[in-house]
Image (cartoon, rainbow, N blue to C red; front, top):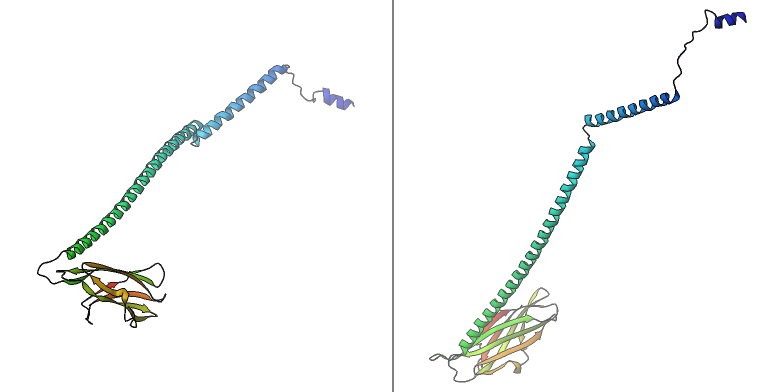
Length: 246
């Protein structure tokens, strides 16, 4: 026991330091100051690191604003271009419609001109010519496929030209060339056994219109049709003409 006391309070005893007591508020103030200094240092280090890495919040915000303004400008220009494109498309459609109308008008005028020429030629044939013997002319000979398969219609106009001292009397005969089952077939109108042929009698002074229809097999295709004009008392045709079927 004595030895322990000597070691505790003797020369070999541990050293003791005596310091003045620090008030608690100064101690808390120092800790708060140290914390603020650390936060400030961290903030400065963070900002320095961003600048060193090439990133600045202020510059980033400015760049975002600039890109937003550029995008809005581009959207406005795009809307204007779309409006101009729509207007151009409308103008192009109007031009196309006008062009189609002009083409239709041109076709109609061409057809009308052709009809006028035919009418002029027709009336010229009706004018009497002195010193020329009368004759027969075939005008506007057409053969057309009707709406139903195998049905065809034909029409033609016969005129007497030159001097018309008397009526023209005679008859007509048609020869139809058609194709059926890859074979060429010839059909006559009126039929060979029809000796009368009342529907093909001719008797006119100036002109006579001939219209009619005939039927063939539904799978047959009429290629052409020939009309033969016979004068009364003659077995040879005085005039022939061929028209392609349309």
